[in-house]
Structure formats: structure tokens, C-alpha cells
Image (cartoon, helix red, strand yellow):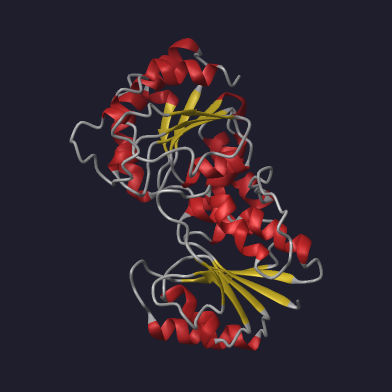
Length: 344
């Protein structure tokens, strides 16, 4: 197999969970190069994957066909003469480029009018009995080989941090008088919606309690530009604001990866940054609300999950359909701090 192209998912957490697939393909086809076509949003994840030779970035937009852009990219892709492509998103538009580029083998899950665009396929599992996402992606690696005994239970995502990103965050921490040995990273955002976000007041109380317990501790709030307002609310509710900083939207994803690796511990919602922390094996507490840890757990022996498993959860809704958000509100800061202390 001369060249393999991966069409990346559009969410950071999903991208992290494709790394074991890349590792599996590299072992199956050791003489092949693996390139990844990814949106600029998730491209840094693949730059942190040692199996990837090149990351091809594209300005893809959510829910937009962008026919002209896809035709132009397909023309460039065709010139590279890839022999095999794995289309990891389920959408029709994600399968267009490898089809337009005449890549002979186009592997993916069936769905959204992709008949013909995907020519080596698996049926999507039911929503009732979904496997963990890592296994979901890994199953595609078996379509071209005869290995019914394959087991994926021990394979977990692994990311690497670039020296450039590491130097950049070390410089930022030094400028802020933060010692990495006392750094805690809190990630209050979740792109999916409010039903996955632990309340800002709880994050603020956790910060207060942590600093009271350990006066040397410093907290950096990490996330996207969309999380800046939530993080600022947390910072404003914290009495000792010299010991907490809002960096949401002020770091690149490459820098966020490096910062999470340096942290003493991470506290996050079920989010892309949670999966990054797991892949870096940083000690972490992962808080779940409307989602369930069985399907998208942080795959790390240094991760602790807090999920109340209420009768109404997991509902997988963006907002609480009952209006009370008890699945998150009832997770108290004291419980999270006690769990955090077990990681030390």
C-alpha cells in the first residue's frame, strides 16, 4: 500500500480517539505513508501523532458543502496517487473528496447517501448498543485483512508534544510567574452544549478550596474563544484572582496540548481537552453530565470519572430537557477536590 489518506473527524475528542487506528494502520502497512486531511480546528491533533507524515489543512466549515473547495482539494489529492482512504466522519460531504480524487479503496461506515462514494464499508452500530469510539474507528482497520481474532481493548490514544509548542507555553508560564510544578488546568467548556458543562460557580468554589488547601497552587482556565465568557465568570467569582488566569481563546490548540502535558492535574467536562489529557497521561478528573463514560471515556489509568448516573441520564441532549441539570449541579466541588487529591 503506497499511500494512505485519512479524512479526519471534525471534533477534537473524536480526532484524539482515531490515533489508535493510525497506529494499527502503521503496523499493518509499515512501508506506507499516512497523511491526514483535516480542518484547521483539529489539525494540531494529527501533528501530535507520530504515525502521520503530513497534515493537509482545509478551511472546512460546519454544515457547509463547499463544493468548489472540495473539488480543488480533490484535484490536489488526486495528484498524490493515494491507494487507500479512510473516511472517518459519517457525512456525505466528507466522502466526496476521495471519490472525486479517484482513490481506489475508500473505507468508512455506511450512512447519509454514501453508496458508491464509499466502496469498502461497515454498517453503523445502533445508538442503543454503541461501542467505545476508539473501537468504532479501529474496526475499520479490519475490513481489508482477515483477522477475526483482533482485540482492541488494550489500545489507548497517545499524543506527542512538539518542542516548539512546549517552549511557547513555558515562556507564557514564566511571564505569568507560574511554576509548572504548581499548575492546575481547568477546562470549563464543552462545545456540544450546556448539558455537558459543570456550573461556573462550582469551578470557582473548587478553585477557592484548592488554593486554600495549597497556597502554591495556580489555576489556568483553558478552552476556546467560545469558552472565554464562562471562564471569566469563574475568575470573577474567585476571591484570589492573582492565582487564577483565563487563557481561553488565548492559546493555540498546539499550545493547549503542551500546557496540559505540563500540568500537575486537569479538571474538565466531557470534552476534546479531556481526551487530550487522557492521551498525554496527565492526571485528571473528568466530569460527566448528559453523556456517558462508557461510550467516550478518558482512556488513561490516571483519569478519574465522576458521573452520577441519574435515572434521567445519559440523555445526550445539548440542554437539560427537564430544566434542572441535576446531573451536574449535584456534583459538589468538595467531591471533585477529594477525587483530585487521590491523583497526587
